[in-house]
Amino acid sequence: MKHRQSDTSAVSQAELDALTALPRPVYGSVQGLPNVAIGHRHIHKWVQLSYAIRGVIEVSTATGRFVAPPHRAIWIPACVSHSVRSAPDTEIRSLYIDPDAVAYHPACRVLVVTPLMRELIRTFSEFRVEYDEEGSEGRLARVLLDQLAAAPEADLALPWPNDRRLRKLCEELQAKPDSRKNLSDYSQQMQLSERSLSRLFVQETGLSFRRWRQRSRLLSSLPLLERGDRVTDVALACGYESMSAFVAAFREQMGMTPGELVAGKT
Image (cartoon, rainbow, N blue to C red; front, top):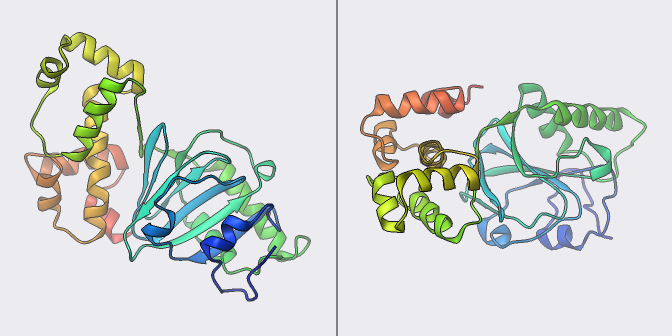
């Protein structure tokens, strides 16, 4: 098994794929992962935690879409097929974790990254691969695992329906966040009553039509905000009639304003 030869050199995707076991319970890497390298579906035998110091990460699985701006991270369980997308200038810190080393969660989720966790991830990602488990590096790894186990979940996941008709509708909503079509329009398009369509949304996604659409729009806004688009332009591109309506919805969902997100405040 090939390892990095220095503390800060980046492991290649090929080297990562070739690993059959982690050399330590937590394996950190410093790497900027381009879309082409990880945009296809793949599986790891261990937990992956993807965190962007700069930029926005998006993970897609068969059951949902998960988006993490700075100060959020995406937990990807072992053996879950997933793809990852990010802008070319996104700076990623990835951790790969033995499932037996941390409280295990079987589903993908987005975690809130506290200032302490952020510094732990940054520091750990600079360690040599075979760090001293009994020394200060091993103690830091254990603190990091404790912090991960206690990290709160952020509502930045968009669950995908299994129903083929509803999935097609959701794909349209995601592709056209500025669409003005409403529940009545879609119910006619699908030849269902509004009540039946509303019930199907809740059954399949756990969210109402309105909440699913709002979350989809807000997730679509994150890459636009991160690349520096004006808030007003982002609001219109994501289907909001005014900047104030967008800011109010954003604050309700994210716990901060778009400006605070861009400024890097938690």
